[in-house]
Image (cartoon, rainbow, N blue to C red):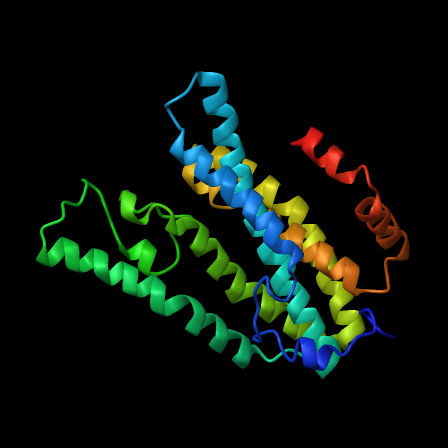
Length: 260
C-alpha cells in the first residue's frame, strides 16, 4: 500500500535529515512570513498604542509563534514519513546529526557570548537569573528570568519535540511496519491534540504558574504532525477528502482571515 503520492521520493527526500527546511515545501514560506510579521508587530508596538490594538497585536504575536510550531510538526513529520515510505524506515542517526549541526553551533555560540559578557565585561544579571535552563533546553518549564534568554523557550520546545517524536515514530514503524506504524503515529498525534490542553489546565490548577502552562503547548506541534500523517496515510479517506476540499476551496483564504 502506498502511503504517499507517487513521486521519486528517494531523489526529493532521501531521508529526514536531508534539507529539512521550507525549501522542500515552499508553500510554508508564506505562512512563516505572515507569522513572523505578527510576532514583530506584537513586540515592536507593545505598549505604544491604545489598549485594544495593543491586546490584539499581542494575541497575534502569540498566534504567530503557535503557527511556527504547527509548521515544525508538519514539516518534520512529513520528512520522516516520506523517508519511511522510500527507505522502509527512519534513520535516527542521520536525523539527529543534521539537527545537531543545524542548531547547536549558533545557539551555544550565542549563549557563550552571554556568559562572556557576564564574566568578562560585567553585564549585570537580574536577581534570580539563571542560565542553566537555556543550556539544557528547558526554558519553557524553568524560566531564566533574564531577558537575553527569554526567547529560548520556543527553541526548548522544538528540541523536546525532536528528542521524542522521531523516536516514537521510528519505533512504531520498526515494530509494525511502515503502513501500520504511520497510522498508529497519526492516532497518537490526535491524542496529543486532546491531552495537552487538559494537561495545561491541570498544571495551572496545581501551580497557578502561567509560564509553565504556556510552555506546554505541544498540541500545536501535534496538530502539524497529525495533518502530515493524515495526508500520508491511505487509512483516512473521508478525512482526507474533507481536508482536500477545504484546501482547494477558493473561499478558504477569506474564511481564514475572518477566523483570525
